[in-house]
Image (tube, rainbow, N blue to C red):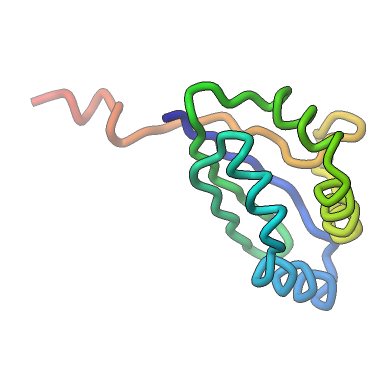
Length: 118
């Protein structure tokens, strides 16, 4: 299983943030099925201020390209993404049209050199 971490901002407005949080307390089943159908086995979203952080653990055959193709042909996902997009704000360094930005892992305690020294 592989893990990906991604970041995205919300509009910096308490009402917008509250509405986004409320939307994620009642994600439609069809959206959850789409996420699982793409090979995403674990998805968690965390919030600090207006910054979102997502952790995804995926099946070995998962790809972002395959997920994008699946989403593009799913009316329900497109509607959900449009609704969520109304709350979101791209990170300053995101490519044009990019929402969630893949984060670079810079430390792992498990893989740390100091953990391997005796």
